[in-house]
Length: 153
Image (tube, rainbow, N blue to C red; front, side, top):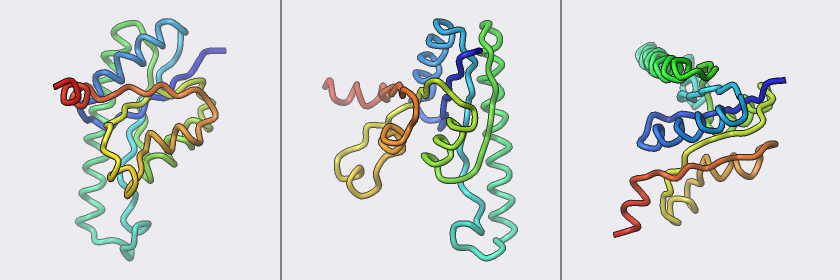
């Protein structure tokens, strides 16, 4: 049975390091990479009524853009001899990552950390922290290289 690695992608500065780490692990473990982007939830689930049409159209356009971006990453990985698949889902990020991890029976999750400060963590929390606390499999956390550069100054 092939190993499965889930790779949440947020298109931030940590995306490239996350993809490099995931590709390295996929090569070592002969694994399939599942690239996932979690888009904002449908407006009717976040307090809007049936939802202003314009908001729905903006979200739909964002989902299409995210899918195209993920598919570009998928083609790059596939071109390097790695098996991958791109998925875009909508909802709360940590919940959807954990849900897909269960659904796909992944063996590992590779995700980035933005390394925000203590106040942000206290008030908002972190996707990475929630995934680490609730994941059923090992989680590899890749730090944001921009944050490392700031700390080394």
